[in-house]
Length: 263
Length: 296
Image (cartoon, rainbow over all chains, first blue to last red; front, side, top):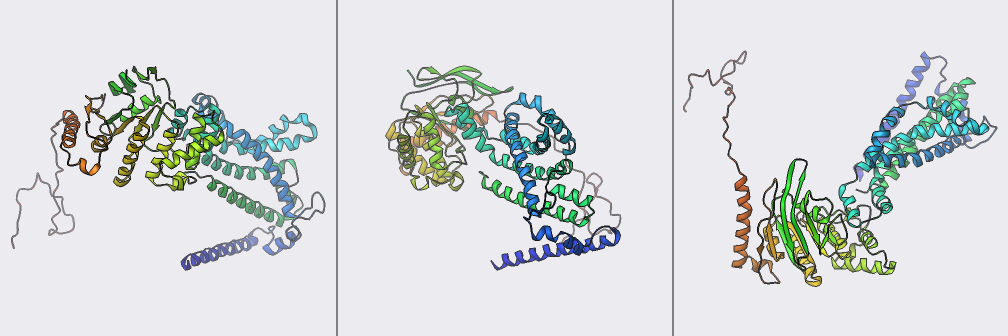
């Protein structure tokens, strides 16, 4: 117990040391890049955003967590679409060799495409919705980019279902739907959740690009705004916020993931 | 008429034959054990009877009906338990009961499940997940799950081979007891001659593959109930054990081949540590003319 505490303390201390080094590096960088604000100037410029995280002073002037909230909401919608579309596609890929032969090349080609490239296509697809085009375009971009890890991990998981589990179902003459929901889905869940976690990471990456392109209020747009208005310090604040939120999301997802570890 | 009948069943995977011309007939209520070496097609034979794979030729009939595909009339107990790891003991059994008896009311099904859990003495562990159970307990759950679907014939595919000797003995006794109560027809596959003789009415050795087949059956006329300890001194038991063991060993002797190969040793000798360290040349057996032996 005592040894554990010491290790924990040491880890904290070293982590703080890391942050210290980070600030030293920042100060050194200030000497080279003259336009980069110092840590103190950054704090001064951003304190209203941070100290009143939920304040609403106008469409473009909101507290940092309120902005993050907008981004998270959009991510949640796009992510939900990604999971709802990605998991079934992954199941089909895992179940059928023919399906894999037909669609795997397309998946492999579409997978590396950047969100910046998907966005204009999303806009074109939803031009008919007039005022909603931006919203749907953004959702489309997040969903398409975030879908792939779910698709691929689900497919791998389905292929990895032990034959024994399927034999149990066959001996009991389970119906197709029962086989799917009582045996195949639970057996694939651990893999699916790995995919879900990776997908969430990507969805959170994409949100920044999407907000910069659409100008929708959020944490990505906050950075863009800071750059336009020469509040360079806020760029750093935005980056740190994105990083911390991403980290927290990933931790939460891996908690859920370990809950579903069956074996 | 026999209960389970296999007529000249053959099965090969790709170009390698696994089973060739296997014929077997089991009477109703009989306990038949098949003994053989590992990896000689015992599990393939079980999968064929269970209907999980189809024979290349020959026919399998249960009560006169052709076996085509798996079904709950043949209760297969898998070698590796095959419990679903996300379901508890009770849920694993309930899944089977629900699938096989859809007409029963939920209360009847629950009662049925409890009956079989208590039959294998696992009531205290009914809400545990398989990973929280020992190997023997898992196998008991697996047996309970299979018995719960009230199969016409019980197929035991090396059910005890992964267990330690004590647990194995316990489960052997439980299998005997279950059989005494229900008089189920049982086909057991095992690699232990003792186990086969302890449990079965008839023991059939499986020859060595590729293309293994069943040898002539050996009737086991030992009185029941059979006691593990006194059986060891029984002359009939000894005779049967020697007979079966000889048969099994005979297969491998026939398969044994002798190959003579020329062995070439590397042409090198240990370094002479007394020689100067620099540029010490390797000593070769072919170059060595004289050996210096220092005596104390």
